[in-house]
Image 1 (cartoon, one colour):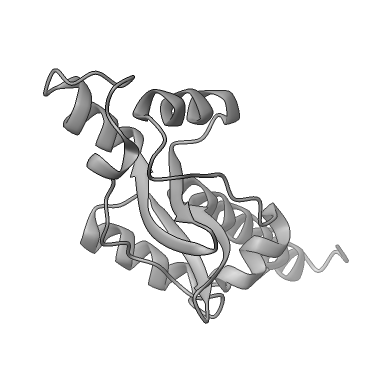
Image 2 (cartoon, helix red, strand yellow; image 1 turned 60 degrees about the vertical axis):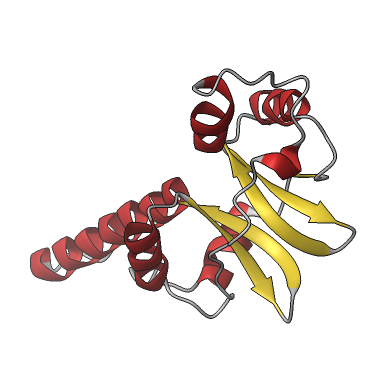
Length: 148
């Protein structure tokens, strides 16, 4: 396993399940879906088009802290419209840099405008830990001379 694998490799391991919501849905419905699926973000889509992303952070900062009602606020009113995204060819390192620079925790994966999946900071950390463990095991086996 390559410590700096591609997003394509991550999606092949984790799957490409994407949860999305329409911009007309209520924030309450979005938060309910996130809780039900145990996820921290939803893609906001209209048909096949990615319009934005809605995160738990958006909810807390744009609804809860502003005293808005999640049952009366539409997703389109609070979504993050400028979506930082990656392609399957991007590397884990590319994504970590983007997430750090833009202070985001989720990156949609697009190819020719088509949504292929989403990677989270947790996905990248898990990939890195697994790759490092594999490398350490290979080095220990090599140093000890014992076949793995």
